[in-house]
Every structure is written in C-alpha cells, then in structure tokens.
Image (cartoon, rainbow, N blue to C red):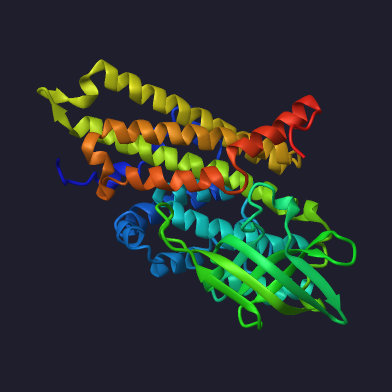
Amino acid sequence: MSTQALPYAHLGDALATDYFHVRDQFTDEQWEHFISTRRFVDREILPEINRYWEAAELPWPLMRRLAELGLLGEDIQGYGCPGMSPLARGLVNMELHRGDGSLGTFLGVQSGLAMKSIDLLGSEEQKQRWLPAMAQLEAIGAFALTEPTHGSDSVALETSARHDGDEWVLDGAKRWIGNASIADVVVVWARSDEDGQVKGFLVEKDMPGFTAVTMQGKAAARAIWQAEISLEDVRVPERSRLPEAQSFKDAGRVLITTRTTCAWGALGHAVAAYDAALTYSKQRTQFGKPLCAFQIIQERLVKMLAEVTGMQLYCMQLARLEETGRLTDTIAGLAKLNNTRKARQVIAEARDLLGGNGVLLENHVIRHMGDIEVIHTYEGTETMQTLIVGRDITGVGAFT
C-alpha cells in the first residue's frame, strides 16, 4: 500500500462540493467566518491532528487558536463573544468537523452547551463572571446531563439537589461528559427535592465532593476527553443556580441549538470524506488509468456528492428557520437524524474506495469514520430522534 498522504490543498477545498452554489447565499460576515475557519483547518489542523488523535492527547495549541480566531461563544451576543448568525455558526462547525471531530466537539461543548446554558438560563452576574473568560479560553466549561444509567432517557435523571439554607447539596453521577476533567465550571443538571423539577447548577472544579475522571479506551473522537463525574454532598451556593433553569424543558432549549450544529458537523465529516475520495480517485492509477476513469467509480462519487448536497440543503434551511424563529426541536432532530445517517454512508463509501489506504490515518478518512459514530450518538441517537419526530407527525408517543 502506498504511504503517500493526500495533499492538504485538495482535502481542504470544501468549495468543490458546493454543486448547487449555496455559497452565493452567504453574507460577507458568513463568508468571512467560513473562509477563515477553512484556512485554519487546512493550514493548522490537518497537518497536526493525527498525532493528537492517535495518542489520545488534547491538542492544546489548536484549542487555544479557537479563542484567538474569535470562534468561542459563536452566536452569543456581547460578553466578548462573536455574535455570529445561525448560518455563520453552522459553517464554522461544518469546517471544524471537516478538520477533526474532536475539535468540533470541543467547540460544541464549550460554546454550544456550557456557554449557551449560561447565556440562555443564567443571571447577569453569572454571565459577566463566566462568558468573557470562556470566550478567551481562560475558563473551560462542561455540560453534565447524561448519567451512567440514563443515556437516551435523560429526562429520568437521578442526580439530586437538596435545598439546605442558602445552598444546594448535589448527589449523583454523570457519564460521557466532554471537557469535565479539565473544566473550571460544569453545568450540572439535577432534580430538586422541592418540586421534583430538573434544575441547572454551576459546579466549580474545586468544590469538595466533585470529582471527574477521564474515560479510557475510546476508539473515536480521541483528541477530546470525556469524563465520569461523581457528586457526593457537593454544596453549591444559591447564586450558582441557573435562575432560568426551572425544568427539563429549559435544558431542551439549549439542546435544540446543539442538534442543529450536529447536523452541520455531520456535513463537515461527509465533505472531508468525499473530498478525500475524489482526490484519491484522480491520483490513484490502477489497470493503466486513474480510478476516476472507471464508470463504477464515477457512479460512487456522484452518489456521494448527491448525499452531501442534500445535507447542505438541510443545513441551509435550518439556518433560515432559526433566523426567523421557526426552528423546533423536532425539525432539529430530523436534520440531525438525516445528516448523521447520510454522513456514515458517505464516509463508509470513501473508506472502501480508498482500499487499504483508507485505513491509514494519513489519509484522514478512517479518523472521520470513527468520529462520525460519536456525533451519530450524542445529543440524541437516531432511534430517539426518530421516535420524537414520529410522535410529532402522528400525535402518538411510542415511548414513555
């Protein structure tokens, strides 16, 4: 097998997949976010990320660049955040995932989950304390919802919050919490003993009784760390409770946005795989001519492009609906379901088209093949999104 890596310039040409000219709809602001992130991916992420991914190490230099490029905080207005439009936010997420799923996930946790929770549900004091520092990566955040025995059934969470004077006492466990072992502040969701409703709390890393241990043995998204959290009599002052987080529906308000970025992220993975397959088919010679000269290869490439183009149109409409206030959880769920499913198909096709070279990290496709499994699962699996949308269109719930 050849060990020659695919040229970064070709892998980075995301415009080559814009078959329906959707870029014509970008504003100057959206184009600038897109093109600057694309340059960052091509020039800095792609040449370096494989060694971090293979070693399961955090790419700190690349993570710091997210702050330097003004990407952290995405669409949050003020507090040192960039205040992007929904389309610009989506394009940034697409491009980061085209580079690497771990960095895309880091952005999603830091900005889309932790910072967004504080922005949507926090007090002005909480926003002033945390958002500017998080936008500069002077503070790292996490979002702790999933529990060891409550993955898809997250609304049934068992972590408890007992009111004791001017404090809350948290007990429970969380699992698969991105950034938690390096976080300065963790948004912890727990059920109140007063009204039985789920509420949000800002737990700081040095609070007694809070521990976060990095999970080992992941075969995907290896350049970001997920953790198991233990909460044992963790005392959180009332001022660290998110005042607008009064029920699980408020956690859902945060998750609507992150599900749209999942759809954009899946598109980024698919674009990377298609670009790699197209480039390889032009460069690889078999039976006396380039692979792309064979009819069956052209058919496979066209089918991949068709899926990528459909995913692009899903994402563009998501941004339009969000801009006009018509985005719902079911629309976001359908887009996540569709795009992660299609991305898995495109990446698998690209891996196969590259033959044995498709399993080499230097050609990037196998890394995307692993990482898409993560985005396919988190923020609600395909099965759960199917049932949620099914309930919406039929009026009948197929699960409790």
